[in-house]
Length: 299
Image 1 (cartoon, rainbow, N blue to C red):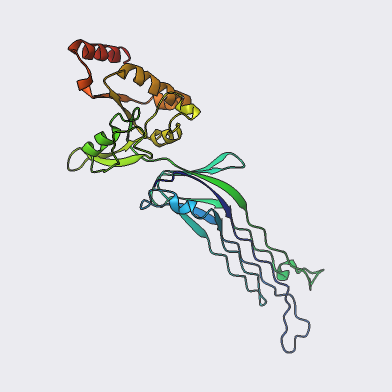
Image 2 (cartoon, one colour):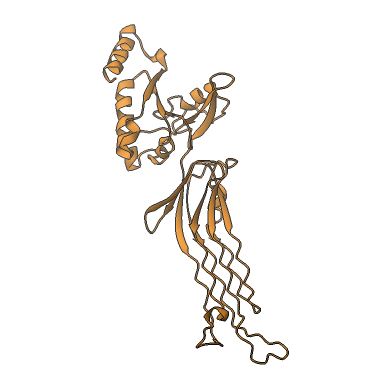
């Protein structure tokens, strides 16, 4: 099962408190302050991992918290820094700060990282506050609180070619013939419920990744059918392939471009290739010539 959108709560670690301490040595009854600083809290980091393909593991655990820093100690010892928490996600995951409605990062390369919540700074120990006028400060600074954020993770597949079309047009069959992918294929609408990826080999040294997107229907942007949420997966593509049944091919080409434009105008501006399927539906050669003529007029 492919999970491509998840909301999580993240908390970085608090900074450790500074220490109040004084030297207590033989023959030094009134030693000066030697309280150390607190350790910095751990940060929450999200990292891209090419071995992952879904956000399913993230969905099963919605709350993440990094370790807090340890308090400072006497003898000017700094507290231990809290461990960072690293959350691994698939390549192509976009990170969004929900409250600020701001993109925090877009992880498209292996090992890419974004710090989504910085750990709190450690508080200063009382040794830091000693001065010529205040030689024995009896106070220290508390550590800084960690950050709390609500973050949306949106997976956008990384593919050079996106295959789009109406339900049951044969997109999954086409992908299975072009690549080694084995998507679910059926004779009923909406067989494909999630995008499928396949590597298409051109020759020994060249290949590209193609994505089969679940079927779209008119008013998908209003939630009809499976809606338009899967269109995010073709935002990174360089070329779109329309797989259209011979019957009503021109009308459906227009309908698909309309839905793409309503979702994101940049999608319909991408280079597009039209592939006609189920040619046996046509009864005469004139019907095929009309389709070619209409398609050529559209550029």
